[in-house]
Image (tube, rainbow, N blue to C red):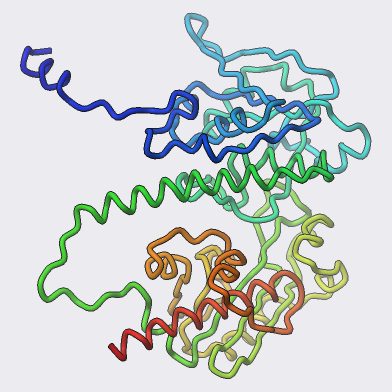
Length: 394
């Protein structure tokens, strides 16, 4: 290094970093971290590439759970990531092996004392699993996540994959159904993500300059004021709860905002029915889904219902799951980023946003969880449409 470069490097400001959570001082979240003790021992086998990742969730597991431990193998001179951990024979491994069984089935036979999760990118996880043969001798279990991953910073390889922390929480809900502190872990997870996204947004805004003659703000789409607007919500499920299966749309509901006309379709899956656990989560009956409507018939009905109207959903996940059902060329409006733009604030879960804004969910008459979610989304669409009208009057 030249003398000038060395002098510049020495003069450059060093951003203070929290030694506990590893985050920059301004983004430290230690003060908000809960303590969540569990009866189950939690072991995370982490790939070394993941150890210093700023958004790794295994760090949150270690900081929040006294009965959790993170093991990071180091290849060193051996070139292998083998790292045996002393666990009981009754331990279970969260891994999508073809022979993995649903965790609730395994628990009913013999509850494990230890839950093992493998942490890293999908490629790293496969290598860790391959080189740690001691894992192969243990029982393998799988989960059927109740909802898509909240991990908005890093993209999961598949829509039904979740982060390590989310998988551990989902597993502990099965292993310790009486535990009341698990939601606190997800709340801490949400705060970490929201804080980073807000920081990123602030950094981007700090370098923007408004140009003279700039076109009117598009923070909220004007189409939300269209009385033909149709708000939609969908529930999808893994056939039979199989982790390698492709999610299928099960329940599709919609409301036209202008006249509150409602559309509802329970779809008969092409493959196996959703698992009993997921049916309970969606608040649907087995027989209702088994006798569900054929997809093509539902698609034609929805095309007639929606016509050429713009469609709105709280998140893009609804559109992703219902894409085969949507009319060709339908305009898709995602409400969540519009809400964030108006409030200049993180959103969070739709139920929480509606309650925080003091809105009254709209009664839809639709069944299950989808019916209540649709009612919240319609209330939010109307709230945003009122902002459009306010801008027009000013």
